[in-house]
Amino acid sequence: MSSMDDIDREILNRIQSDFPITPRPYLAVANDLGLSEDDILKRLAVLKKKGLIRRIGGNFVPEKLGFVSTLCAAKVPKNKIEFFAKEVNSHPGVTHNYKRNNKYNIWFTFIAPSMKEIEKNLKNISDKTGITDIINMPATKVFKIKAHFDL
Image (tube, rainbow, N blue to C red; front, top):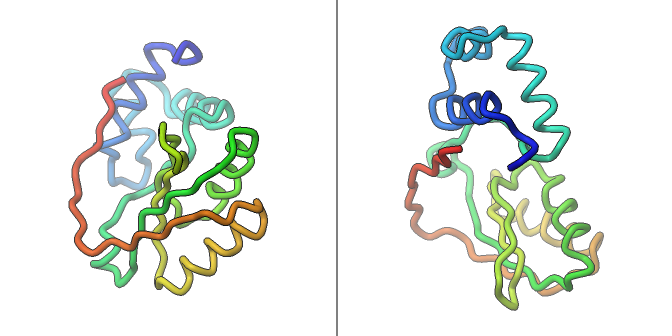
């Protein structure tokens, strides 16, 4: 966290759960925080380049849009974790990807229009990375919680 200053933290706190729905959302954030829109955009670009932000986008309830979601777990050797995570993150349907202290050490969520598409993407991930031990656990009931990280 040392590569962020207090202003960066304020910006991230503001946008992660209360993103303005306006034609110029970053101007609204800038006005709220007493900054310029250009400063907000530049700071977010730097945070993204540093890898502190993976994406900025809306979250939706997949089922209400006719999509499906799944939780996946993979057994990845330590020397392949970064490579595997980068491949997983290259898929737009991946919403979370994290390391756990478990024999299945990489867990990620995947959303797509169909389970067939998710299975195809999981096969592609396996083919590209050589990781074959990937468990697919489709959601049967989704419990949405608000995940806001106060920075």
